Image 1 (cartoon, helix red, strand yellow):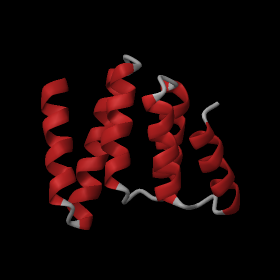
Image 2 (image 1 turned 120 degrees about the vertical axis):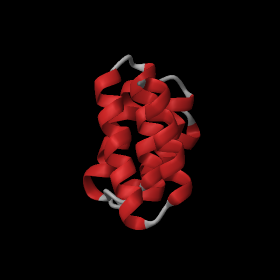
Image 3 (image 1 turned 90 degrees about the vertical axis):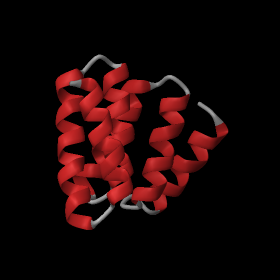
Length: 103
């Protein structure tokens, strides 16, 4: 386990509902090739904070890498709806492009 992952897990133990910390942890797992753990963390973010747009995009990308294409499509679609509601046009555009490419 990397020092960065360990540090983020320690911070999350103190603030378990901090979506930003969990997002950083998910990306550390993703970048380290621990895709299943990354997907678990992205799902955890969205379970507690459904408005966290970037988690939909990077979570969907992770699911694609795991070849869970239907789940990736569903995550992108849910993210499009969430970002439409919260006015995050930039992330919505990324999600729409990702969903279009995935088909």
